Every structure is written in C-alpha cells, then in structure tokens.
Image 1 (cartoon, protein in one colour):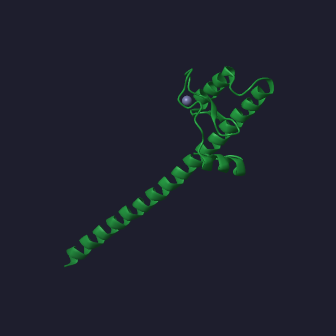
Image 2 (cartoon, rainbow, N blue to C red; image 1 turned 135 degrees about the horizontal axis):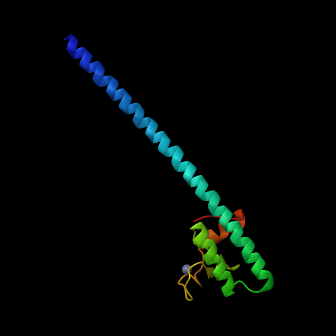
Image 3 (cartoon, rainbow, N blue to C red; image 1 turned 60 degrees about the horizontal axis):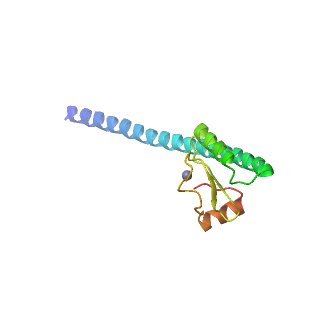
Length: 126
Ligand SMILES: [Zn+2]
C-alpha cells in the first residue's frame, strides 16, 4: 500500500515535469518562430527599400526595362536571398532577378488585390 502511493507520486511528479517541459518547449518554439518571422520581415522591407531606391535612380537616366537594372536586381537577390521583381504602374513585372534573358516572370501581372494593397499601404508582402 505504501509503496503504491510512492510509485504514484513518482509517476505524477514525472508527468508534471514532462508536461511542464512540453509547455515550456511550445512557448519557446512560438517565441523563436515569431522572432525569425519578424527578422525576415524586416530584412524583406530593407531589401524592398534598396530595390526601390535603385529603381528610382535608374529611372532618372533610363527606363525600368533597362538590362542593367536586371543585373542590379540579380545582385541584390543573390546578396539577400530574396527574389526581386520590379513592376510598372499597371503591376506588370518589367524586371526580375532571375539571371535569364527571357524569364517567365517578365510580363506577368501582379494580382489586383496585391497591387491595391501595395498602393494603399505603401508596401505589402506575399
Ligand atoms: Zn524571373
């Protein structure tokens, strides 16, 4: 009888410790995931600002479909790890960071919802 109570207490304590570690690991995972996502979002916004600055500078001297802008977009893409698209006012992709002469993204249009969101909010991510 006495041994049975001790073994039940031991099992209960072990279960409590296991449950506590389970909750702690879940909270740690959530905190780490939100930190990584926030860091990635910040890096994406920084990259978008750099691309916008480069595109604005190139647009001063030539048009957005200049091949040199594509090379710069490819360099930025390689440095940051993000895919870079530059679109015209209608949402048509005019520059892609793919190092291909005829990329499949060139000429594609952004979805109307994404275009509307970027116009109203100033930026958006997809
Ligand atoms: Zn592409």
